[in-house]
Amino acid sequence: MNTYLFPILIQIMGMIVIIAEIFIPSLGLLTLMALALFGYSLYLVFTTISVTAGYVFTGLDLLLVPFVIYMGIQLLGRSSLSLKRELSAKDGVASQSENFKAYVNMQGRAATKLRPAGMAMIGRERLDVVTDGEYIDKGELIVVTRVTGNQIIVEKSK
Image 1: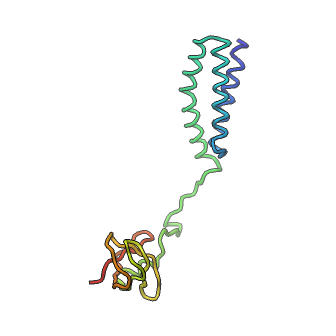
Image 2 (image 1 turned 90 degrees about the vertical axis):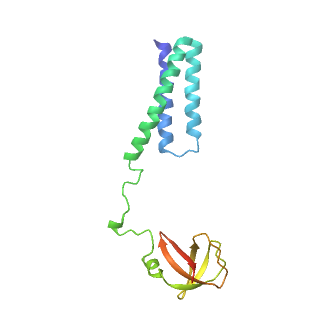
Image 3 (image 1 turned 30 degrees about the vertical axis):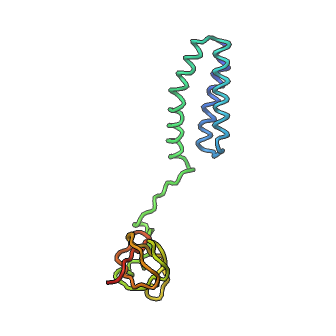
C-alpha cells in the first residue's frame, strides 16, 4: 500500500497546482509544474507498481483533471477575485455619450476623407464619424443619420 501513497500525493499536489493556476496568472509556469507532477507520478506508477495501475491512474487523470478545472473556474466565479457587480443603465452607467444623440439629422462637413471612417465638423465640434461603407471626399456636406453605441454614422447630404 505504501507504493501507492507517494504517487497519489503527487497527483493531489498536481490538482492543487491546477487550481492555483486558475487563481494566479503565471503565464503557464504553474501548468508546466502540474504537468511535471502528473508525469512523474505516472512514471512512478508505471515503473514501480504495474502497467495496469498506470492505466488506472491515467484514466482517473483524464476524468478528474477536467472536473477539477471546471470546479476551479466555478470557485473563481464565487471568489472575491471576480467582479460581482454588473454595470447597468439603472445605476446610471451609460455606454454612449448622451450628447451624441443630439447630432442626429445635423449637417456638417467632412474634415478628412471618410473611407468609411474619418473626422467631420458638425456644428462647432470635430468628431470621429463613420459611413455605411461609402467613400466621401474631404469638404463634402454630410448629414448624421443615426448614432449607435459610440459611433456617429453619416452619409452625403442630398
